[in-house]
Image (cartoon, rainbow, N blue to C red; front, side):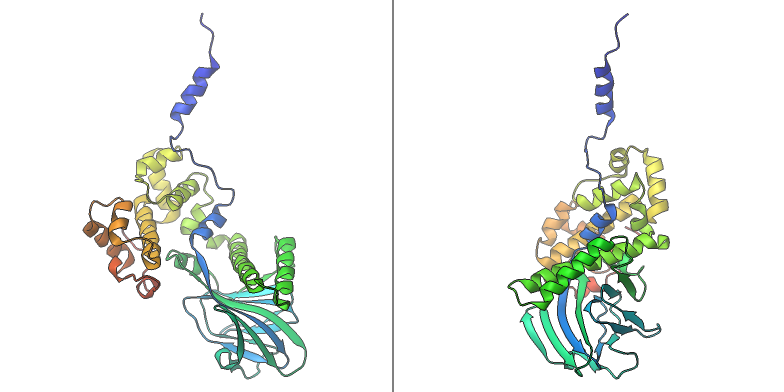
Amino acid sequence: MAQHDPRHDAAATAASAPSDAFPASADPLGEALHFLRMDGVVYARSELTAPWSVALPAMPDCVLFHVVTAGACWCEVDGLEPQRLAPGEFTLVPHGEGHVITSAPGLPAIDFFDLPVERVSERYEFLRHGGGGEATHLICGAVRFDHPAARDLLRLLPKVLRTSAWSSPQADWMQSTLRLMGAESSGRMPGGEAVVTRLADILVIQSIRAWIADNPTARTGWLGALDDERIGPAILRVQREPERPWTVESLARAVAMSRSAFAARFKELVGETPIQFLTRWRMHVATTLLRDGGATVSELSHRSGYRSEAAFSRAFKRVMGHPPSSVARGGAQAAATAPGAPTEA
């Protein structure tokens, strides 16, 4: 009798494996957040002495943040109890609500834009203000997520999100980051503002990640599905390569599931069909490329697998709520009002 050749098993396994071998992500949530493309709007380093109180106006399209590097302060948001922030703590105002940062609750506040600031660079300012008492040093800023899908995430976040470098699971890393931010912001070394802004961006992302990890109810829709060992990799495939001619069959095959089982589980976890999610994600990508001037409508129609520019434009309007021609380079007036989660694709 002929001997069994183990190479036959290896060949059979290789033949049955997905042809589009795809590396798994060690951090699917971090990778998904990367796709949302956060960009800084303005940053300010503040040296404040008590008594002081500064009112920040509402910036609806932005996430506002404050990092305490020395001293302490209070954050007052309408409808919430004032929150005290000590060194090593920072707070996010995810929905861009107007609020007050103050040395003590209840002080009359001065509008931030009425205070004299030193302009260090295009997006970085230095503020010195107060009555000469106890000092507080802050790094504050406003950031915007460029990707339209970010609205799905930001809607989940509370009015105020507070994080401490002392109690966070990433305490050592956050403490080191805050010390570096404090050192860079206290000096006037060339490029210091660039270092501070990058570190601030990282802290914003880490704060959002920590909140999601601590709040199981936040893991809904595509964020929650990222944890699934089959659906998570399928979502990342779409996000990494939206231009590929994906079908339900090819996505199911890529994660070793039957078409029917994959479609049912995807709908259960994500809340929409694989093709709806694919179409919506492609239109989000198209919005970003159009706004940045990275492609024309004609180029995007072919890149997204549509046979004509007209067909692409109809699909874009159905998903985003406006035609692609309305998305101007550098401006996002139309994109800012687009719905985050269409009901059909």
